Image (tube, rainbow, N blue to C red; front, side, top):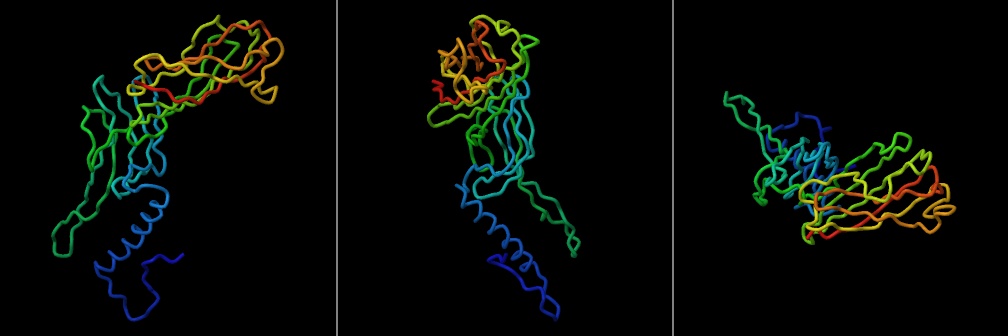
Length: 271
């Protein structure tokens, strides 16, 4: 592939290598890269390109994996990291431009090896500028896994993804809980909400918010349970003011299949 800027190094006679020629080489790929990125979205950003998955490895802790994003027309390498913010802290991404010196032929050290990197911080809210923005403005999907068992013979596991729309103050939730090896089915707790995930600060409603989880029976090929539980189509779910994502399981009469799932996709007002 030919770039819009290129140099023919095949000519004889001794190429006149200068700093200007090296600058041409650098802009040849940086301009092309930004043009490609712009085809996929706003390069003012922030726009995630790769990596940077947000997770909650433990209650109160926010972690973001390493990756790349674009902000104000600059390609930025995110180093990855985790923070545990205080009650009034904001989780933010801070951009810096470290430089490394090289010693020139005239004996002078000059800061010419330039990088643009970003790190994760937890600090008092400070808005956004050219070098800082809240992680929620970046708006990645957060991800929390869950695996355990309320009873030894009936393990439950699942994942929830969450993302906040700052402009409408709405949180989007999507995920599922899978139940397997229920024997007997009556081991499930009596009617009541079970907590599977807890969302971090900033993703919690002022009042408990309720939504629907759909019953999936793999043996029936979809959203249709079997036998005497044919009336069951949905489970009640809720997001509490403490950030707990809960599903209201019921103690059935033994007609549940040996394994099934509760899946959901909802948008909930936070205030």
